[in-house]
Structures are given as C-alpha cells and as structure tokens.
Image (tube, rainbow, N blue to C red; front, side, top):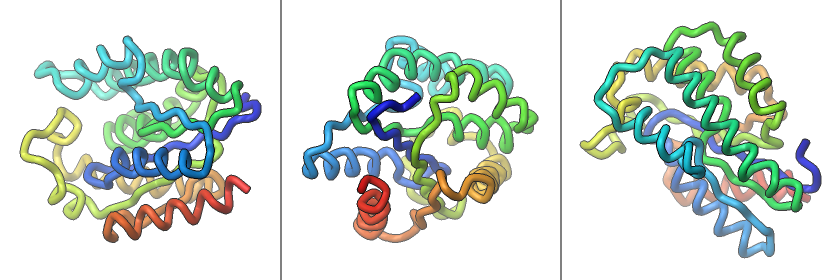
Length: 205
C-alpha cells in the first residue's frame, strides 16, 4: 500500500496553520535529503482544482452529503494520480488535509453518520491511509481570530459547526493515537514547527 514511502497528513480546524506548516515541513525534510511531494486535498489535480472552486468558493448551497461525496471523489483522483505513484517511488508525501477532514467536517460537523463516511471514504481510496497524521489543534475562537476577512464556504459556517469539527478531530485522535499526533497549534509558529520536526525525527528513523 505505501511501498517504500512515508505518507504524512496535516489536519486541523480553521486557523490552525496547517498549510503553512505543511510547506515548512516539506522544506525541512528536503534539507535532510528526503525526496518530498507536497499536495493538498483538494487542489493538486485538475479535478481537485475544479472541485475546490465549487466546494470552497461557489455561492450555491451544498448539503453535507454532497460535500462529502465531492471531497471523496477528488481524493480518489489525488491518490491515483499523485500519492500512490510517489509512495511507490519511495518518496515522502506531505498532504494538506485528507480523509480525516471529511470525517470531521461533514461527519461530526455536518451530522452525517461518521461510520458511513469512514467506511465509504477508506474504501474509495483503497485503504491508502497516512503513516502519520499531525493534528494541529486550536480553540475555535483562537483559530478564527487568525483568519483573513475574506472567508471561504467552510469558514463561513456557524461557530457551533466548527466547535463540532474540532471535537471530532480530537475524537479521531483518541481512536487512533498511534497514527494521529495532536500538536498544540495555539503556540507560536516557530514552536509548532519545532514540535513537528521532533515528531518526524522519531518517526522517520
């Protein structure tokens, strides 16, 4: 499934800084002579870019189930086109969001049965799950204070929705403590970066 490579995902609520930390992690790994592929879900395939526009920037109404199925469809293309080929070549893959985000946002946040999303989502990607997930956790109010004024569809959802999302992520971490490592993202950026690097030094030995 992940022959020779190592698959890392960064997850977290809004304002947790995961996109920035994904880029910093990629740069750090490259300084350590690792061959790294950085992707985001959705957005790193032609289909993903089209879906990203619909899911995050369209003005139309989408139900949580519609959102979930679109995210899953885009993820299948990402796995087939980029993640699996990179892992087969022995590369480290760093992915900004993945399966856990759909479970947290559309499952815990949108009230779709979590077991259904877990089953369908994992089956769709053929079990291509991360070796390590870094969950950048941050209180909802703190995360939103960091956001820009221009917000996408997910960021515009009610705060109670985002509190459910955060609680959902933490619940997933309790279910899979060996895969999902919680990092306090409310700390300064440099501190979070060092913490992530320390985790990777142990996992990549």
